[in-house]
Image 1 (cartoon, rainbow, N blue to C red):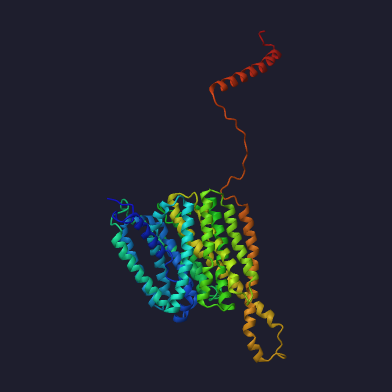
Image 2 (cartoon, one colour; image 1 turned 60 degrees about the horizontal axis):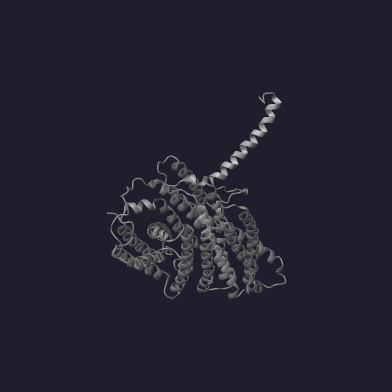
Length: 534
């Protein structure tokens, strides 16, 4: 007997929906590391920021690695056994994250947590996809829900870490996973989804190469500034290893009967343009580190106030999801929706450019954070929908994995590393320009030490504004590109007037008139040739 549902038949339908929302609401924002408590983790463990940045990237790599085999795992194991076992493993990994001070253990655990939690989330995403009217509506509800929930969770992570300790939040999350495991064992059925599929069809070597490739890239993007980029042998060897393993991964897929990743998706026009737009989105997403440094370093916000700042995006996230639902309901072309999303992010950057002053109050964040929330939600929905459109079923889930890593890790990591390096160079130049006006013969050493901190803050503001100016220039170019892109719409159209004819008698009369006109045209030609019998 097979059962393609999730829960036992005796569980009422409203309770099933409530349980699906409960599991999805807890598992989707769950992570092995949270950006809200990074400061507390660094201060307690004495570890550099780069390790936790790499751990955050490792979580995205794990989620991308599970996507190509998610369906085969669903067909191989019973849902109750799989979900219960994975939730117990998640509880163990989260407990280890909350009790260890070794950063490499945290990085490995984040990779495994991302891998395992996505295997469970896929079980609940499929039923939610079935009850939504269209794929566009599903993406709208999903991203609106996930992005809003992520901001709330990050805020409560900071609050809980301040009241108690950052370690206790991981232990609390582990306890919640054990409770979910007990609920899944009680309410879920123990039947298979369909015919049992073997596991040896999975190319495990390609999966290991996928993980190794992007792990080496994450090391380069995380530790590049700290290691002085290519002046470090670690960066050089990891860069070479990334290129070699990535090339070997591509070559291996071309010789496999069942490839782990399908690179045929890059032959489709919408995939290429969609990846480019996600690359452009990474420019704005990477501004989060600059916003945090400005809020904490210049405006002197504490961690809780900075978390409240991110809560201001929630109205924009909700509005973006609602607009997306209406847009997909009326099947309007995505061009202006994507244009409005990038426009909102551009306006956020412009407002942030003119707000780079030490006197900025909290109320002036309302409009830019609303625009950032709307732009983020609308672009996550629209660009993801456009990228995944018209893909075959066999290519869909592998494409999910690669595009997820591209959006959440590669683009953001690349631009974060690039902006950090550029900002550092601009800041050194700004300090040199400010120091030109100082004369050691006129200013005492005590006065210099007193004014050193204001000079550093001014140099940071100058560097931020300079970098934001270049991003604004790039933003206008992105707007031009989006406006002239067709988004699948036919490039050339021609209006033709067609007369609809009804009735056989009318058609017969028209044909007789055509025959008479044709015979009258042919008779003079026959006379001129001398062959007319008359």
